[in-house]
Length: 92
Image (cartoon, rainbow, N blue to C red; front, side, top):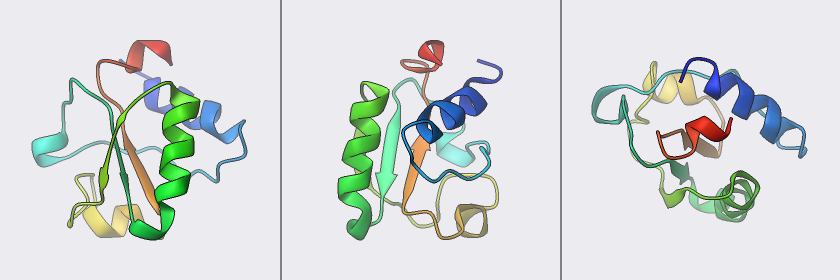
């Protein structure tokens, strides 16, 4: 859904989450049916809070490389990565 990631970024930012610019999924995660929320172990509590704020999402440890454009460089120092799927995209 065009613009859904940007709207989600604004929405989560309104809860006080520190956000980076949205980017696109890559490789095996380019198109998802189900939203995934990846996290580094030290950010698990934040990932759970993100899932609650979004109303769902499957939590999982962060894969290496990150499945986004730019991989680990694109991830930067983010501790949580939301991969917005078709299930929640219409909500944003």
